[in-house]
Length: 106
Image (cartoon, rainbow, N blue to C red; front, top):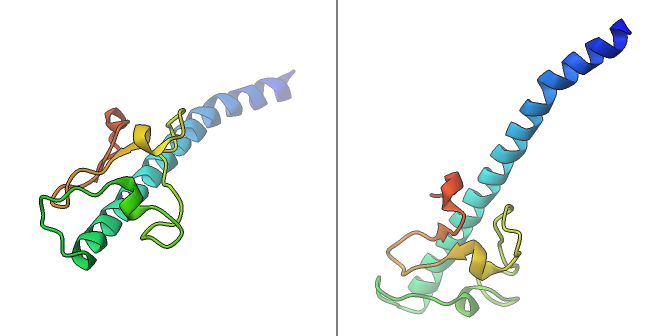
């Protein structure tokens, strides 16, 4: 009985830490995706000689022969589509996460 209560106590202390670590990893993944999108957008603007006010669409950046081969998605986005995960904006602004309420920002 004592062993079971000790295991229960340890689990009660460990589970919140696992949840916090998972949320932290998701936030870091989203921020890394935002950095990749910003780099791809800047490279697109440089190579195609676009002004700072130009706004790329996802087909300009994403594809096998483009700047990003796979579509980055926010890890907490349940819809799993690029449109619900990120907003590119123009070249002079940083991309934003649609789930920004969780501090997913550059």
